[in-house]
Length: 260
Image (cartoon, rainbow, N blue to C red; front, side, top):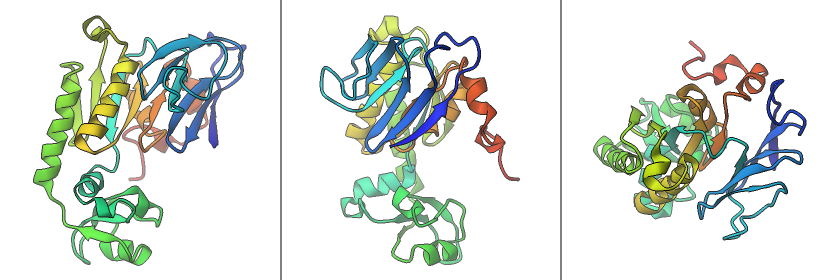
């Protein structure tokens, strides 16, 4: 298990409790607050939300290890939802024999990589890489010509699932969007974090692709959070802990900032 410590800024309500940690697991993520203070805990499989002072590795209701813990989990309402390796995931969904194979979406030897799956990324393949370099790095990759009409159709289906939760869906691209979920608890009877966990399950079950979720107070932090635990992740980054968390990170972590 890999851990990234998110040290809190002075004045945080849990300042006496030790550092925040994001802990990565094989089948999910856990955002925990160390110490004796009670924190909100969400089960990503059954949707149960509760408060406990003692950390448990599994959901008391269904036994799932896919838990998210955060002191503000019940109140944060801005999310960024991003499909994982979307084009490749759609192709793998339609061709199950490719599930464990490295898949590259792109053109011929003179083209570039449009997208690739996580298996291909283990070989160093990246989007926008010249195809000849990608095939040199991963000669056993399955190369598939892009089918944008199919990807667009699946993207619309996923967006329709989002709009079942809120009309305030702000698309960023074909496979990602911001969701503004303030006030939805009164409509749906569940807090935004629970609604998002349910959304992820429905998208995976009904449409065969997985999503990663970032939850925060605003779009900027939600976008950063959604990249912290890919694929199939759920990460929480609140405004209160953001200054301390971002202080030691490279500027390229910020949305829209990177190499020229």
